[in-house]
Length: 203
Image 1 (cartoon, rainbow, N blue to C red):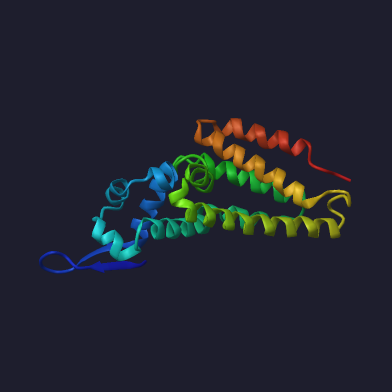
Image 2 (image 1 turned 180 degrees about the vertical axis):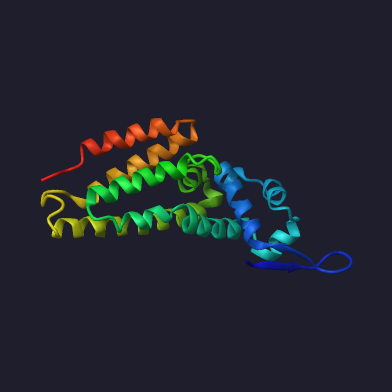
């Protein structure tokens, strides 16, 4: 557990748990998006002052990047586990049901941090949008490679365009994230997954 030691106006230095503060910041960004999260929102949730935030994390942009790292490591673990599933259909199902779990968790904000942040980013936050897009592209590339392997192994028909199949899957995931953020229930999203799997390409 990382601890930051920062100078106090008087007396001994103050300490705070960086991990806990970062988790709190993630919650704010996830619920409000990058631009919607004010410095007051962040410092109140993190339990630190603005100077302490700047000293430990840099500026708001740097804090968001750190929060996004945490989000990917903890909340998107299912995307990496999905790639290990034995069939392409199982990969897609694990991916989508993992997204439902993440997007409707009772202890986290609803929806997807990446979708929330890219949709709400203006010109002044273009670097945030660009970072999210690069990370998403990397995840999509891994999925494309997994589906290409499925074709080589005979698990997907030869005529399937894996780029289009991956884009289709991500469109569903992003649509579910928007719906979750707008109040869709777990049951609502599970029905979307079930319907999507009905059209999965078979041999």
